[in-house]
Image (tube, rainbow, N blue to C red; front, side, top):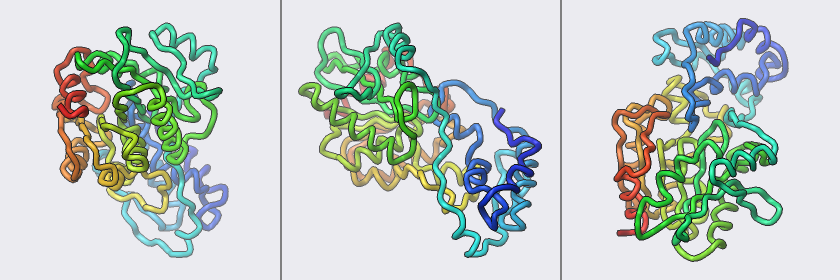
Length: 340
């Protein structure tokens, strides 16, 4: 369980932040750093925070002297309401990056694990981009995969199983991009660095040979994919969004009903980016998604003005999508993206 400990209030009352009483980074972590955000793309189930988490959060926010108050109620219906926010206080808080939960490893260990999974290092010069699964019969296209918030790219081999041979006429090499600050890759994970890494990966995949390059994003990675595709629409031949994230603000507001926008620096606004992409986009929504929410995913699909198709895994939770190889939907998705 990710919970604010009993000492959270005392910790929050120290440092520099609002009126020097609360650390800016700590405040952002209190509001955004719960297990639901850890689950953005994490295949491992995480426990929801218990009622004591709300008690600690309310006490911590009370230390702000009335700046924010927690409206009590059932855990899933908890609200953050603005009680009183002085402009001078708001100005003292810098937007904070989204908390991320990378799994780190040294390169030698990661390469051993990759080879045991049938993958090889994917490099661009001396830079490790991630991991590649070459199609044994020779690929006619490439799929670049952007994973979710937790773990590492090596936890997403189910994309290889699902898509490498999904469409008989279009065998795919599958590339699992590793984010800066994840796995063995150096760097700091922020929206800017993740989008830059995605752009670099798209360009590298295009240099690998002829045929279409598709971009897939899962959960938080769907936000990265949407923004990257919007920045270079001619480089992405099709987009696949799995358990799509409309934006961090939309999801955080649903969990808490109100999250001050000034706390959010990394927003991953897929809802704004997708119309700038305009290409074929496939959506896979988990019908019981308790993290990024099915209705937000469907609203993202409904609002998209480009060519699109929706697949709904009705019984699936956020981490419970059925990834069995051979499902009809994988072939349908590839054929849709290629225009068949």
